[in-house]
Image (cartoon, rainbow, N blue to C red):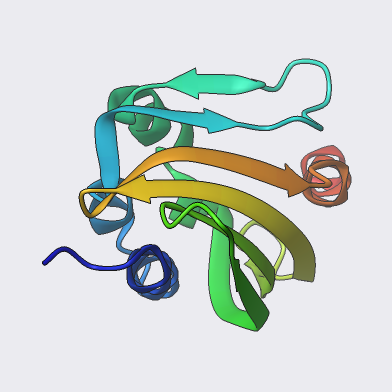
Length: 138
């Protein structure tokens, strides 16, 4: 029996906290889709395939030091493969040591023990503004 979507989601957050990005992306299917409906101009709105997710997250832990995943609420849906996760992620921006907290709502489709689709609803401008301030002051 394969792991439940909730177990896979928790494994993903554990790997994010451990800064294990290779382990995190290994939880994605080869043909997975990751979407960012609120992506600002210049940011991708859709990534197709695990390789695209890996490329997008390349250097992630060099920029962001994730320290906590908290306020987690996972909602199971009438589709056993789909969950909705609410969470906050807090840590420090590596370049300047400034703290950050970003709230997320994610809709995940997980089947066969792998993430097939991840729709990420968050405000990327929070981190973009903070990181841009760092680049300007550097």
